[in-house]
Amino acid sequence: MKKIVTLLLFFFGAMTAFSQQEAQFSHNMFNNMAINPGYAGMNEAICATLLVRQQWVGFKDQYKDASGASHSNNGWPQTNLISIDGKINPLRGGLGLTVFQDQLGFEKNLGVKISYSYHLTIKQGVLGIGAQVGFLNKKIDFSKFNPIDANDPLLNSTKIEGNMATDFAFGLFYKIENQLYFGLSASQLRQADISYSTLLAAPKLVRHYYMSAGYYYTINPDFELDPSILIKTDFASMQFDINTLLKWKNQFWGGLSYRPTDAVVVLLGYQRALKNGTLRAGYSYDITTSAMGANGRSSGSHELMLGYCFKIVAVPHEESYRNTRFL
Image (cartoon, rainbow, N blue to C red; front, side, top):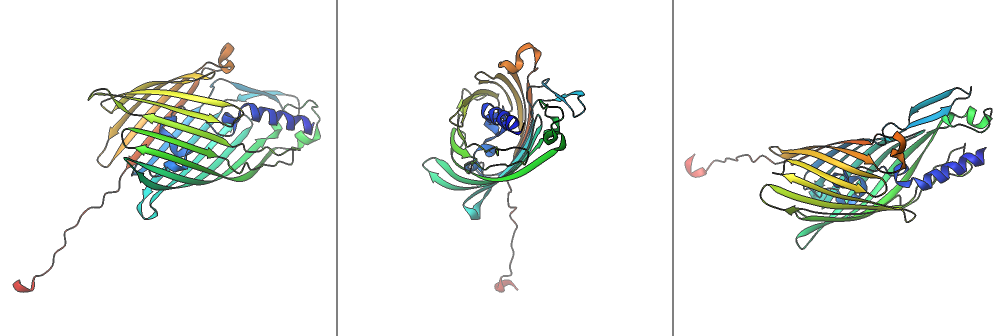
């Protein structure tokens, strides 16, 4: 039985590498900090981004407990992520922090990533050279597996089991303000093993490679077109996100994104310039085009984005002194 469970988990992990090991987001054009450590501090401000995603809403897990009773629960992936980064002038670059929580069926992931980016001015833009250390805690509830043998002592005696892994990432991010950006990064470089006593073989974190690019095209004083692309691969499979946003007066936006063999995405958003910063909010709805949406298995995916950037401005203060000539 142990061998069967190990084989199934390995196969499932290989087939769904991007949904299981590295969570995907439809607001990828606002989420560079989470996938590329070279992005830290590139906005010359302190920026925070919150993403809340429910993927394949309506899909349910079906399982039997040790007594043979049938149960079902929400099986769709649910992911929360918050990232914070800022420019630190004494470090000649920026620092970033990303915290995420991912629920995928019987598996829960909690991760923390700490990033540093060294900035170089190259022609009209800035190149960020980034490194990252990450900590991932992965838990699996083995009691919810449906064993072939209902009296299997291994699965029936095991409840929730977890372990932690440390891994690293590297990235390059080049940006010309209000014109374009381009990024290359690789995560889970160490390919750490996460061992469980219930499994014969330890699942391994697989290296993921990302390429992102975007361009800001001013149509006229009121409208701006922002096309972008995100490519993700582990060299066993590849996924594309092709995006286009149309902004009106730099306040409202609407757009479409296409993820081949997976989804067509509708994006809506609003941003407002404040005294020392910018507040933005966005919503996306994924129309599932894969088998996950067939026969009403899923009603689609929902995602909310909230972001805020602000600059710390030093308030000048007047200095006075006495002139000895006028004492």
